[in-house]
Image 1 (spheres, one colour):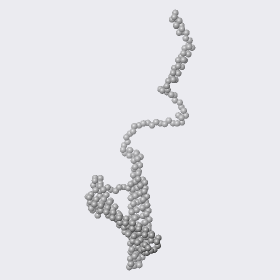
Image 2 (cartoon, one colour):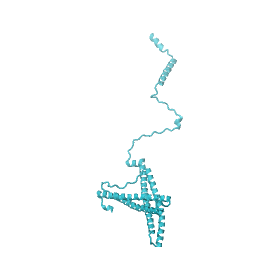
Image 3 (cartoon, helix red, strand yellow):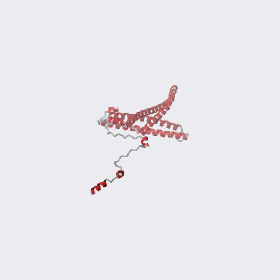
Image 4 (cartoon, rainbow, N blue to C red):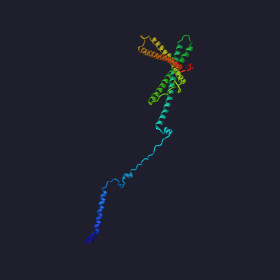
Amino acid sequence: MKCRLAFNKKKSYSPFRLSVGLMFITLVATMAAAQQPAVGRKKIPSLTSDDVVRPTPEQPTESKPVAAKPEEVASASPARSAEAKTSAEEAAWRDGVNKARDRAKELERATEQTELRVTALRNDLGVSGQSARYRNDVAAEIQQTGQRLTELREQSRRAAEDLSQLLDYGKEKGFKEAEGPKATSDEGKPNEQFYRAQVARLNEAIESAQRRTQLYQNRLNDVSQRILMNGGKKGGDNFYMMQLQKDRDEAQSKLDESQAALAKAHSDLDALKEEARRAGITPDLFR
């Protein structure tokens, strides 16, 4: 009897109550799932205006570095390319400096030689016993040579300025002039090219010092003569005498410098000969 009553009690659940129970269980499961952390759950993507306007940047693909060949690195390296360009520019600058220096020296030499020629012509004009025709010819040559001297002085001044500007430009760029040959070769033997270059340099220095010694001696003699003609230190125009004395002091100073340069060049040449002799260089090099 009890069993029948229990069976009847279980059968007494209506469909409505069963439906409500299932809905309650579903609601509880849904709330439990909502309270779980967001980790592991996929978020539903949403499309915004930013996604439409702004393009998504492409991510660079990673690749393993490949070792380049040495010649490829040399050609592709910007530093190497800049260095090669700078070297080419420096080589052109060196060539320009050499040409500018040679031109400045040539014009300076020509100017000094022309001035010496003018002085020699004036001395010839002052010699007594010459014919009128000879004196006229000398006077005409003095005038032509004097004009040439004025032109050469201007050209020499410009050439010196050009050389100075080139040297200043190289200094700003950090350029250096090419070094001459070494005293010894790579094998440690005496280098004849070095001694030949030094001999040529010292011979040029001796020639220039001798020419300038004569030049400034002539200037000193000329200004001293004009001082005497103007009445000496106590006579003549004071302003003119002051200028003459200034010219005389300058000529004397230049003469002293040229004489000192000449003595040094001779001394350096003697020392070079001794150095070459000890190194085993034949004395024929200095003849």
